[in-house]
Image 1 (cartoon, rainbow, N blue to C red):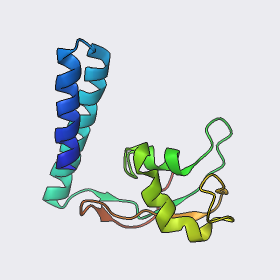
Image 2: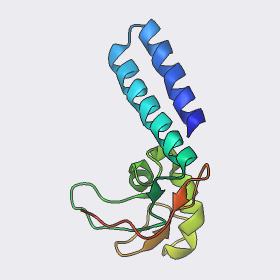
Image 3: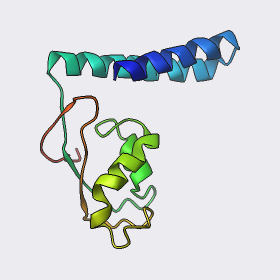
Image 4: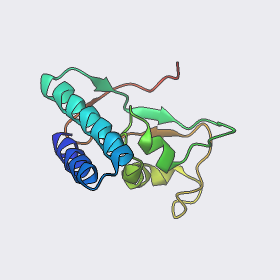
Length: 123
């Protein structure tokens, strides 16, 4: 988590120097989020969900990409493959990561030592 913060901070500084201010702002926010996450992990505080049940969302269907981008999962859609590899045995065609169905319960592998327990519940 701390390394992600450093990476995003470096991006933000580079973008700021090249006058891409909006991109720099977004990278700065991502860096702060990653640093806060690292702090929570170091303090042994924040516990994230260990399981996620795929939902039917008409306007924005769940996919490995979208699930990975949720803050309580990884906060990074590019980490979708981690979810896919851990759960491909549950999907109808294990060779097709685009074919997931509502009701499937996916395990969220822990990264960087974060604590995971229980199942995510929508508010």
